[in-house]
Length: 214
Length: 183
Image 1 (cartoon, chains in turn orange, red):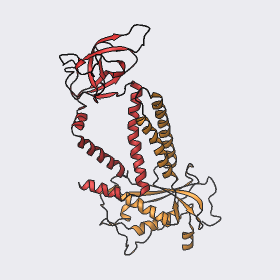
Image 2 (cartoon, helix red, strand yellow; image 1 turned 90 degrees about the vertical axis):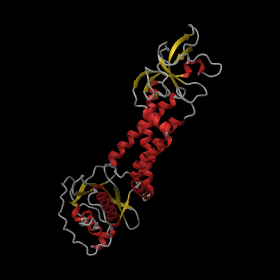
Image 3 (tube, one colour; image 1 turned 180 degrees about the vertical axis):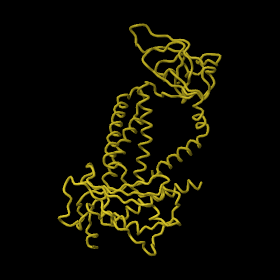
């Protein structure tokens, strides 16, 4: 992003129109999907979006995933302790009470953290410098595709930290007829190019690779 | 069968991190059910707050397949109450009615009592069922007293016990469904 183009704090985000991408002749990566299976179509587009963002030079952030796995296992351990403690009820009621309380607290904390940090995002990514150091803001990807409708929305949220509220939001909204042909073949390259374009809209994240391509 | 193959191939195609996350999710689901059961144990004071009637020894009050809700409490057992008790050497608890209760006099252990039970539909009392040399039940044998019931709902449990492979197959399919769920 060029200097002098920074948005003053508090100013509203203005989404610019991104010019449409011309279809790529002989889009080689053709996967076929059932056009009636909206879940499969959404999953395919989500996976392609992940590939596009990581291909743009960003690195996936595993903090939320690690938290979910580590904290989840810790929570389960207390349930295992309550179940397999050597003494039978009522001799181990104090262990049972402690396990129940800790389990409830851990579950509540885990759910609160995931609600605040993860929401409906399926990818957390951050730009990295050529030396591999993390820089810039965190980008999260989420998508919406209501059942029995053809509109697919990919939402990019840019935030400074995992617990911070997003300070900028960009969207890619289009009908799935733009990304799939009548035979159910996915136009993956075209979609990924569009994703990269939206990622680079003002207020978005740039990576060394994309800068060099301009 | 096609559906099972599809789910299995989906499971095999998962990345390690994704698979681990799904297993942790499954673990949280299972442990949340387990902890609800444990909180019920704590609240009712009974080792097994919900039991299923397996025989017809308490007819016409309770029939095979009825679910019984138990509560222990601190009040002494009284004659006429329906209790669930364990006998040493037997795996399955028994649901019968207490017909005689002897409590020790004041000054001795407040929890000591001797209870004799009998099934409503049986001819004689339960001394033939008790362990060798045992003629009375004590408080330590009693899991709880019946405070409520649901008729016939427990037939599913009886079928699962009679056909354990059906139980394992159902649990496996449910677990596979949870782990491979992308929603």
